Length: 593
Image 1: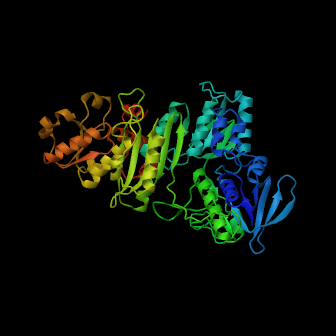
Image 2 (image 1 turned 45 degrees about the vertical axis):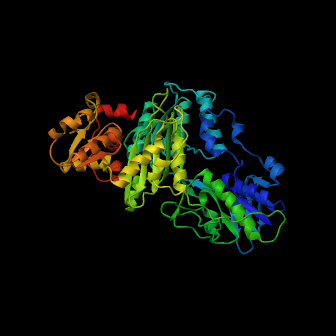
Image 3 (image 1 turned 60 degrees about the horizontal axis):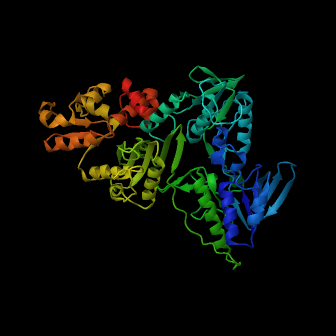
């Protein structure tokens, strides 16, 4: 069997090497339009920042090493320009010589990935870079080396080079961090009202605070108008210096070959595939960022650009091809297995802060009109009495009817990666939110707590499901107060003095039994710093006959939400239930930091 693979990075190379392991007799040719194959594109920003010093460490394989180990015919600098499905051939252009040849196939795998999405207006004369290929980082590091010296990861306030990063998503923030590590002054320009658009606003606000604390000029609700002569003009009528512009506004699936060949393009805009990665042509497969995935929450089509999924689906395509051959070829062992739906697990580090998410956000659930419950917690990564404990902010989204986990977001330091992976595994295994309370997880003081943050989420979820407690979200508070409910702050007098929600009445938890009779009549909302004492207060007051709800996540979550509203009222309000903008107190910024 002759198999052609278009694209030689994650998905394409996984398909090629898996196919060789399954069938030693197959002829496998890989076409890569770039000059490198099987490189670590997720590590590129860290080479720019100097954290990865050896460029060759990013080049995982070469055409020669792949030929030696896997007997693959890898042709770099070769671009597939067309597919003739009737003749079962592809047209290939040598990008160095310009020569065009034709190659036949028995099976074809499309792994061309995605294309960058440019938002720079016409008329801008400055060159713009991306962070997707080795050539990209070579150009960027050459510019930085000329301006700042060799690429060692050092910080300093006296930056001599200025950069504008357009887009403050996951890749954009990686670029921002690594440019700062090189001593570059960075302006991060984001069209949306917050950094990290997939997050909910109260979870993104602490990330923006971290960026600003490291000297990054964060501009939200802003776009680039023009770029010329070392200056970038922004939509807020300011202009900033820019020796370098990096565009990180996201990617679009590369469907050009597929569309020109008449293959079906899915609802998401990516190439339609069945659950074994086969396209609408049974001899052609598609994997990677250009191929459509199935969303695990909705069951509908979606686009997710993740290296892990690309590798998994490349392997699945090889299994499907081997299974479909049916020719009794010696060593052909592949069996087509239906691909699992995707949850969209993602993680990024920003100046020592880790941000991770899985599944749907509250914004997306609200947009879809899906009934849900929300849990915010702020646990430490390990036992508080053991040195070095770091607090994290956790948000869990739960189906209101079934108690299924719909998504999670975590922002913090150590331990975030561990917890998001546990939640993602629980979702894949079909565990309910309440079942998280019953998970048996490894515990020692330096690694966790006897009640792990995951268990704590389960306890809160179980209380909500059982009706043991009722909660109120930060963005619902203004409406509740406007309707006449009384807000009771059960923190200590010292905590209350350091920063409070306007209109709150301070009655410390330890005094609540003696003073509850002094509270105004009518419904109450109680809160503490992170929600735990608030829950205790709510249970006490409800047993004393009061109608009461606990402010989910306490003052810390409200402060983050208030900061998001202050930074971009239009965007933050549009992403949650309508509320009146609330200006945070001065103490809010200390809490976010």
